[in-house]
Length: 338
Image 1 (spheres, rainbow, N blue to C red):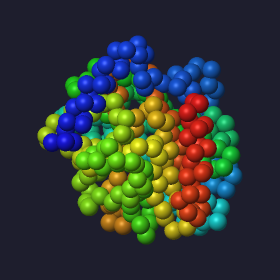
Image 2 (cartoon, rainbow, N blue to C red; image 1 turned 90 degrees about the vertical axis):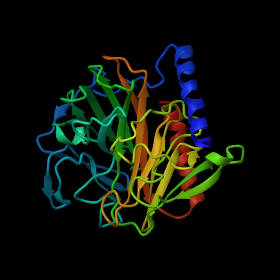
Image 3 (cartoon, rainbow, N blue to C red; image 1 turned 135 degrees about the vertical axis):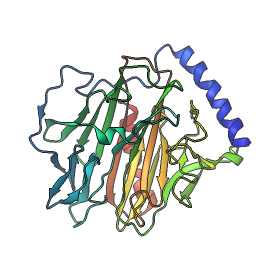
Image 4 (spheres, one colour; image 1 turned 90 degrees about the horizontal axis):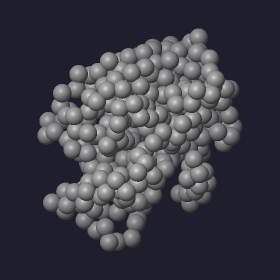
């Protein structure tokens, strides 16, 4: 009951803030080839592009199958980062046949999904912007009529900056919002939990603490909204995407979280103003392979308008929490300026 009262409050607040602002909170940054006609690109002649900078190597793929030495048996449908590894590593952070920062779901909270995995099913175009930047463009999809473009840029320290922009071309979303979901399938970490600063919804008056969260099973306590959440989506009782609509007993208070695999940490860093929700599954990528995910909601959307967000995926050798936090602060500061 306390959970529902909390989300009812933020639901009412959303409409008030939107009316007062006059500008949509989640307007597109205007940096990808979807929204900026000044962006020059060439279409890749393969279904993958290798990015190398600093200590890290990444391979960005569209949603066609790829079978190369670095990605044996990579499956069709899984787009985004098919590979991310440090120069001192021999293996991939992600499950090689799957991916990370993989654009996975488009929905409106209703049960009548013609296709659960629409971004996977329809062609994407891999666009090369520069030696360190590529984009995945997808034309308006047949069911939702959502056009999108995701930009993957590898920064000087090997961090991946991901900018997503989209335009709805038809009023297909019956609950009045657009729901979008991304998955990162981690290859057999010893510890499948994620770590973030937050609070228990039952004790919001208390100070934030570092929370280590592992959901008991797929689709149970699977998503963690922000403390300053400005929108709570309406879901049908029989909505089928269980990672999307099963909030935990926590809210996060700082917009980043991380997990540890071997001697490395994988940290996803968000902008406060995008109000992205964390999500996780202990077995999303297979029995030993957790999914360290996130989702995003666009309320009060308008057909033909562009929306977007920016995040960073930081991958580096793990030493201790304090050292990681110092690195994260630099990225948070940079994201706040974008």
